[in-house]
Image 1 (cartoon, rainbow, N blue to C red):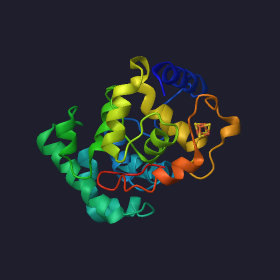
Image 2: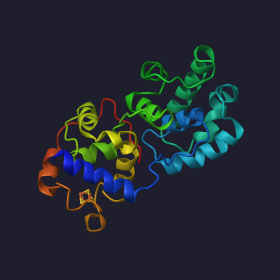
Image 3: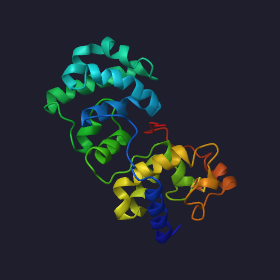
Length: 227
Ligand code: SF4
């Protein structure tokens, strides 16, 4: 795939998806951070149902700390891995209060030091909350990178690096959400909707070749899925 094709792909995606942003509901950077931590291996829809009640009751680090682990669990028990996530959220809130004046830090290093926050979550916060041109490679971005040949790679870091090197600069900030939403609604995992896809003539998807390439070991080390 050449740079002109890439440019055209992002141009068309940005027309097809005029508001490329997260579907995790939030009213502050803190709420976004908590929602993203809770979204690992869970759907945005499921997280939104839980956080609607949680954030109505507690939407600051101090307020969530005051709930305690059991109190927090009662709001998020419909989400997978909720016990581990509750521990991480409480520990993160404590660090925010004690080390960051109750604010979400703006650097990758400080974000990744928070319990429950890995590279992908840090990338989401840096991009969505602070407007940085980062690429969080979730299951959709990994699949599209390899399937469409936008950023082929055997693991998340390799795919992330290829995206960062090849995405046209003017689309770098929105690329993460454009690709997630395209992957979630059109270029879906099992049955991509090629007949209604706006980039069908530019896509290099080869079903047979893709099925073979995705047998490679991938994603496990730092992958947190976001459906
Ligand atoms: S043509 Fe099909 S495989 Fe290619 S991007 Fe569109 S939906 Fe995905």
